[in-house]
Amino acid sequence: MSITFDKYLETGNQEIDGQHKELIARVNKLTEECQPGKEKNVAVQTLDFLMDYTEFHFNDEEKLQETHNYPLLQAHKDQHAKFVKAVEELREMLEEEEGPTEAFVEAVKKNVVEWLLNHIQIWDKQVAAFRNINLEPGACLSAVTAGHRSCCGHSGTLLYRRKMS
Image 1: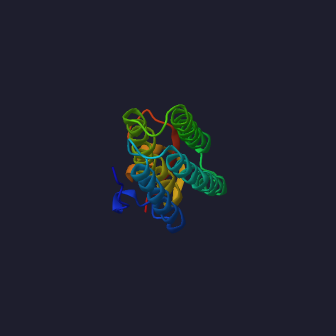
Image 2: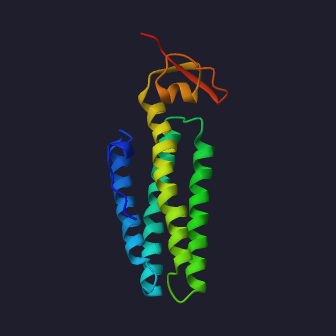
Image 3: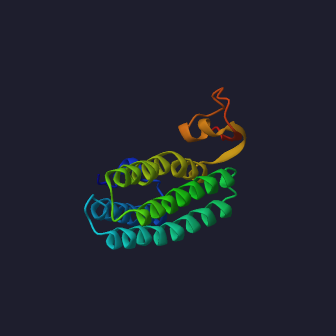
C-alpha cells in the first residue's frame, strides 16, 4: 500500500509538509521492503530508517507546538509516543521471525500507514488550524478546526473562539 501526498495531507506549514513528504516516502519504502519473503535484515534496516526520521520529525512538530503554546501539546505527544511504541513492537515482531510475514505486513499497514494518514489528517491539521486562525478565549477546538465563528455546542475541549470580523 503506497501513500501519495496530496492536498488532503497538507497542513499549510511548508516545513511540516516537507517533513511529511519525507516521512511518507520512508513509509512507502517500508511497505515495499516488508513484503512476505523479503530478507529480514533489509526490513529491519528500513524500519530503523523510518524510525530515525520519525524521531526528528516528531521533535520538530512538538517544538513548533511549544512555540505557539498549543493547548493540546501533551495529547499530541502522547499520540507520537503511541506510534513510537507501535514501531518498536513491529521491530520486535520482525526480530522474532525469519523475515516479514503476512501478519507483519498487516501490522505495518494498520500501525504505520493508517496511523500516519489519520494523524496528519486529524492531529496535525488541528495544530495547523490553531496556528493559522486569529483566536480569542472561548470556543471549542472543533469550532476552531471547522472554522466556525463561535462554539458549535460540541462537548469537546474548550479552547478559543475565532475573532469575528
